[in-house]
Image (tube, rainbow, N blue to C red; front, side, top):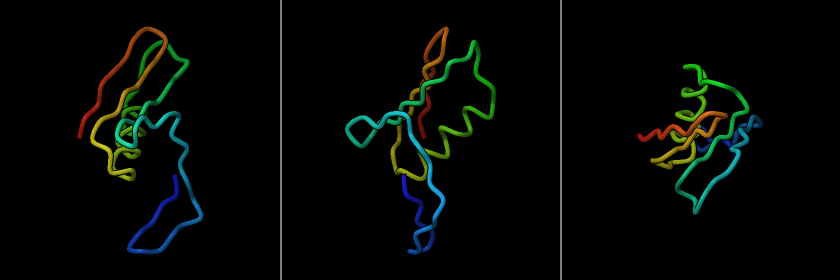
Length: 67
């Protein structure tokens, strides 16, 4: 996902695992449990993409995150 700040495109970029219908961010993790940094990562993806809903899929379940 390209990053634009105040109309300037930045060289840095983020890689969303899956973007469904341009409105749901899906982040897949191969871990037992999620840490706060994983939630922060999805929140960043949601803010940058303009999406309102994110799903974190991990080894033992799914977590829904909404802005």
